[in-house]
Length: 90
Image (tube, rainbow, N blue to C red; front, side, top):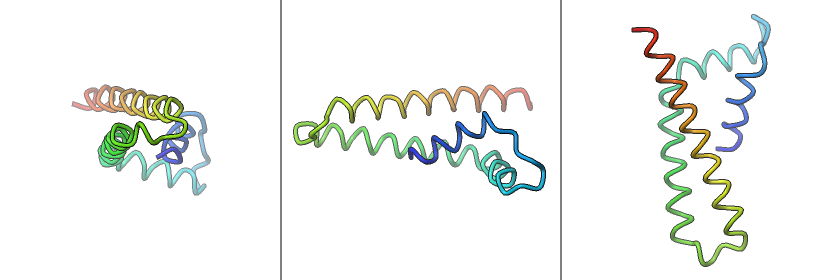
């Protein structure tokens, strides 16, 4: 999930050339944005439930919880931007 989050952040920063592999990857991500957001929701939910179940056994529990919180915040921001941009298409 962290790699996917990094790729999505790079998508906002970099403007690739028309013939590059990055352009094809970013185009694929834009076509499958709803499916990726749904997969991220399931991933965040699984990490959250895992943190609840194993909270007493985690060595760095606060770092783990902060990481999950950041992933959830990034997912919520992506959902907001996705539905805001898709509402302009109607």
